[in-house]
Each structure stands twice: as structure tokens, then as C-alpha cells.
Image (cartoon, rainbow, N blue to C red; front, side):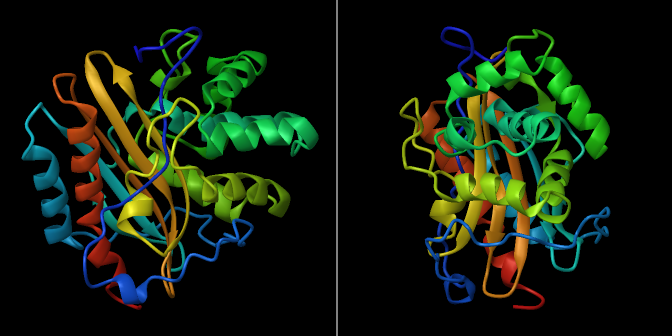
Length: 294
């Protein structure tokens, strides 16, 4: 069960991936316009590409294995332009989401009540951008708790997603990397413009520190400096393990990717070591995103 303070406190941050040489020239300059249109046409299941970028996956695994503490890693990266899997490792294995589940909470709210406006729109923005757990807990309870996950899994065809055993612990929802990518494909290909703009604007404009003070800029922002990104991260503790997930959309000079890197360790690892390892692991994938069509 993810440890919580009060009702729920499952920390989730927002992506950041370690900077490495080679791809910087291929990364588009961050436009500071979170309203960029993230529309893509990858609505159907992406094509599988067996054995692609095996070296990158090996380097990502090495980054986690080198620190011990029983690491577990799942990866899925999809090119939303070609609608093809770019990288994949244990992508069908479910892990605790921590605050990545806030994407499902937001989507369920839009399905049930329409795109929010006014103060409610601000709350959704804060839930995603600042990873505000108080907003998430309030919406989770109002929308039926585990029923949120069940409805969205059924609607989106999420095959490896399940609600928490304890109805109040939304961060203990489990999802696989490929299911997380399915959520991003839905946002970019099927969600109406107004809803997509609300979510991606929030995920683009993430402050360094989350509402609880956690440094959210591990993963995608640090690995892709100057790139356009819209991200949702997760961190917390579940069943004696540290959980750290980096997920989001990344736009290079000519390609757009949906990225999910999900990791966990036993709870003997400290947060600084875990975040560095996950950032390094995701950064190891970076060069692969420039191959074949930059």
C-alpha cells in the first residue's frame, strides 16, 4: 500500500531524463507555450518492432541494476507519428502508478461531467502540474474511487490495469507501461481538442517542486533540455518498495513520442539514488529517439 499522510499521499512528479550528448541538436527548442497542439493520429494499437534498440534497453537496465536493491523496470516508447513501438521492455507487467493515476482521474471527470471550467479547471491543472494530492483525493472520492479505474480500463482497453485493493489508496492502482502509453495515445488521438489542451497545458507547465515539495524534474525535463514535453510522474512507497515512474510526451525536431519508464526498488534505496538511476536509465534511451527519421 502506498504510504500516505492524511487521506492519501502518493507522491508523483513529472518527468526528467538525463542529458547525454548527440541528440541535443535534434531536439526542438522548448516553446514555453504549453498550449501547443499535441494531436497525433496514433489511435489504433501501435505496430510492434522486434529487437529494436536492444543496446539502449541494456543500458537502461544497467543503470538500475548497478544500484542493487532489487530493481524492477518496465519501458514502452511509441513513435506517435509512425504509430510504432520504438522501445519496449517488460511493457505488459503492471506496477504501482503512484500519481500517474491522476491521468485516469482527469479523463474520468471529463467523461462524466465534460471539460471543467473555472475553479474546477484550476483544480485539475493543479492536480496534474503540481501533482496536488488533495485535489486527487477529492475527485477520486467524488467519482467513486476504484470505479474510476474500472471505467477507464474498460473504455480504453487497458489490459494490465487494476484498481487498488484499498479503495482509498488511489496511488496503489497498478498499470503496465503499455497501458500508460495507451492513455497517452487516447489523449493525443481521441480526446477532443479542449480536453487535450487542458491536460497537456498542465503537464507542460510543471514547477520544479510539487505541491508536497518533491523535485518533479527528474526524468524527461533533465534528459531532454530544450525539448517540448508534457509529463506526469509518480513516486511513492508501495508494499515495502520505492516506486518511481516517468511518463509523458516528448517532441523532438521532427518526431513525437509517448514515453513510459516505470521502476521500483526495495525500500532500502534512498530517493536521491533512485531518482538518479531512473533518470540515467531513461536518458539511455535518448539517442534511440533520434534514429530513423530525424
